[in-house]
Length: 87
Image (cartoon, rainbow, N blue to C red; front, side, top):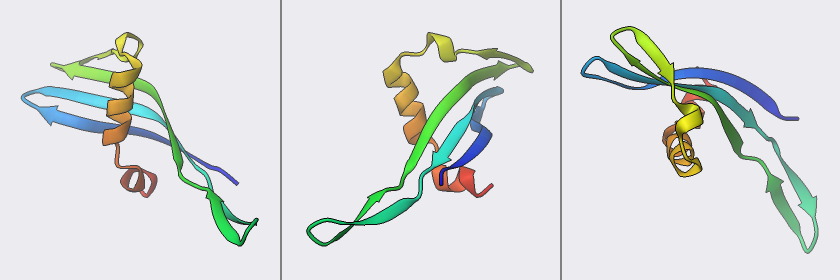
């Protein structure tokens, strides 16, 4: 059974500029299947971003619609899934 976790996390807070990402993490349980021995299949995490907000002087702007898939993937790679899912 998959576990869905929502998050809203500051990933950068320097020089008065914040970048805050929001989204969901779906944790998928692994299972053991037989086929030429026993193998663990499934498992892992699927991360989906719903917002990437740049905040300067207290005013935020969601830039997610302007990001390329490569940029989105880079942000997802930087998210510590274990830390966020246990917060």
